[in-house]
Image (cartoon, rainbow, N blue to C red; front, side):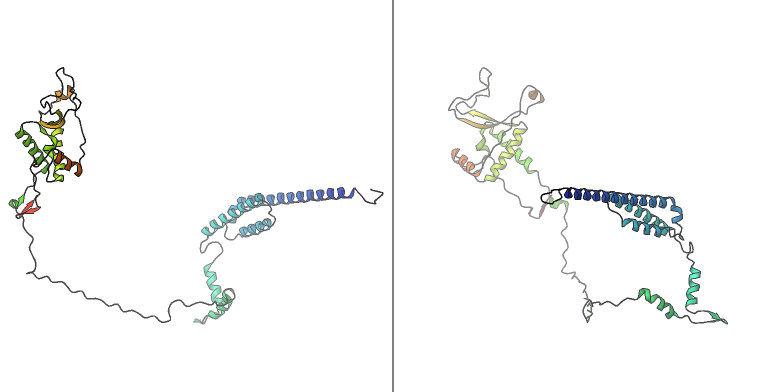
Length: 344
C-alpha cells in the first residue's frame, strides 16, 4: 500500500493470479469433458460390437438408440480425437444397418402382409355380410395418407412449341438404271503373243558399256566415255551404269599421266607411282580381269569414290574435252504401249 498516494500496488498482481487460476480451471474442465466424451464413445462402440447379433434383429431398435446417443455425444465434441471416434461409431452403425436391411424379408421379422391387408380392408369398411361384399371406401384411406403426402402445387414451365407440325416424309422413288446392251463395250482380251516382255534396262545398259569398252580395246577417258552432250540426264545414267562394272571388277578407273599413258600403277622399283609436279593427269577407264578370292587375300582392296556432277560442270567438261559425239549411244525412251503391245 502506497500511503502517500493512497494506492494499492498489490492489486494488479492479485487480479493476474485469479485470471490464471480461472484459465487453469477452464482447461481442466475441458479436459475432463473430453475424457468423458471419449469414454462415452468407447462404451458405445464396445456395446455395439458386443450386441451385434441382437442389433441385427428386425424387431430391435437398438441402432436408433445408438444414433441418438452418438448425437448427444457429438454436441460435446471439441477436438479431432473425439470426432474420429464419432466417425468410427457412425460407420459401425451404418454397416449394421446395411446388414439388417439385407436380412429383411417379407413375412419375416414383424411385418405380416396378411395382417396388413386385413386391417386395410377393415379400415375401408370392406366386410362380408350375408355373403355380400360391401364396397371399400378408398377415399377414407386417401384422407389418412393425404396428411403425409399433401404439398403445395409448384409452378411448371411448358417445354416446346405450342403447336407441332408433323412433317410428312416423302419417299423418293428410285428408278432402276437400264443399260443399253448396244452401248456396252467388251474389255480387250489379251493373248500371250500380245505381251512383250520388258527387258531389264539396267542390265542391258551395263552390258552395252562393257561391249563398247571391248570394241575400243584401249584406255578411254572417263568423261569422253560417259558424257552425253545431248542429255545431262543420260550422262548421269551412264555414270551409274559404269559403276556396276567397276564394282564387279570388270573395269577400273586409273589416274594416267598423258605424257606416258602406258606407265603402270608402280614404277620400275615396284613402288607406288607418284605423278610429277605439273603432269597432265587424266582419269582413264579400261577393262580388267575380274579379281579372284586369292587376289583379295593377297592385299587387293576395293576403293569407292563419289563423283559429283551438275549441269554447270557438265557444260564445262563438254567444252574442255571438245565432246561433240557420245561414245555411248543416246537411248530412246519407250512408250508404255506401242503398236498394240503391252509390256509386262
